[in-house]
Image (cartoon, rainbow, N blue to C red):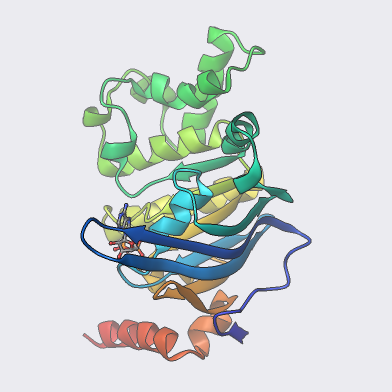
Length: 273
Ligand SMILES: Nc1ncnc2c1ncn2[C@@H]1O[C@H](COP(=O)(O)OP(=O)(O)OP(=O)(O)O)[C@@H](O)[C@H]1O
């Protein structure tokens, strides 16, 4: 296991995503710049689920937004399958965006209330502008995508987001993410609005789909307990630096950095509660 701010694992060759020296700061009116990411390095391997853990304000979602193309870093490199996402032209970036999908914490925010489930799940195909499918073929792909997340197509296709439970909405979000067969999914706290049993169910569906479709996840969470059975590897982010990185079981069993030790310690305290 490697610790320290420069902990970059030797995954460059097979990495789906490779971040090098990523920097980001925000400037608020009347205040100086605040450094959120201080030159971080990490990799996500092919078919790998990498957990990104850390406390509130550590910079986790900032990383997620940068990888998803929703925000630009101030510096560094971000290679997706060997190509630098930060140096692509608009057309290349749009193309890459289809291979990198997102699932967010709040499905209310990410699903348009005016679209039916059928339209929502089909939308990425429409955006992609695939000429190969007609409306009937698209409907069939939506049906398959819904069945894959264990939603019966007939029951759900014509519903609107407000007619779904929180867990169902997150499954629709997953179906939307998977329908274009991405290679990487950034999942930012996808389960945090669900209760414990729904949380586990959603993680099981996510795991099943990633194995079936060979997808890698960058799984962002403040809850290290969730990562134990779900992630292959963990990155621990504290104050804009990756302070520790390694296989999830090793890292939880033998945390090296004091910050990781405090996260694991809090977990054990909770168990005793
Ligand atoms: N658009 C913005 N303008 C100014 N500051 C921002 C902006 N977005 C994020 N920040 C600040 O950057 C820091 C990191 O935010 P980020 O959302 O990445 O943290 P996080 O680790 O995801 O936290 P949480 O677990 O609470 O969601 C925070 O201090 C936040 O206030």
